[in-house]
Length: 213
Image 1 (cartoon, rainbow, N blue to C red):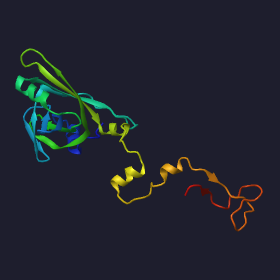
Image 2: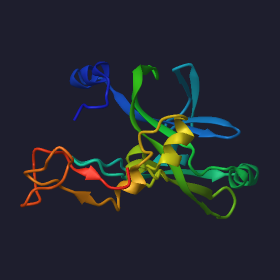
Image 3: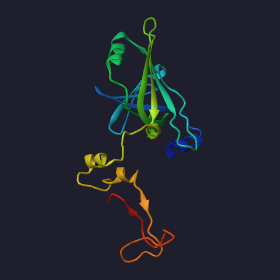
Image 4: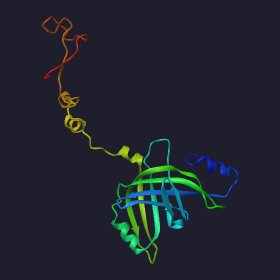
């Protein structure tokens, strides 16, 4: 499956060039954006330098289906020393934007093939710290995709006050609350010029009148 991979990369695959797929992560924190990838060396694209963490970094499988489901992914960074671990613990990480790109490098030259494509975006959710001996410390960050926003309540009430707070002077919802309990009286078929109802009490040709308006 080639979706999410630049055509230049798929061409290199078809010609049996030696390449390796590389995942790039941009994690936006309060202290600044962290740019990492799961190979070695430094690669630059989009005006940013992505530092390689090799086998110390990892990304769980990215899932999708035909429905707009909010799948989670997990970012893992291991081998943290005590200073980096303290910094990670003190970061305000929840709800921070995360973007993942997929690219490839030529194993013969070590060069980046084409510009990596964005394959996932979302926000950080929960961080877990694993403490080990020496430099075996690790941090796991669970991230929610952007589709998770569809499952959350936005807090809007669709009331007149709610509309006025954003669009002052807009009276579109002014009578919305009153309409919930409004009583509708249908005029009669033979209503006279004074608006009195006829015998059957219904006249579909005359619009209903809302009492209290």
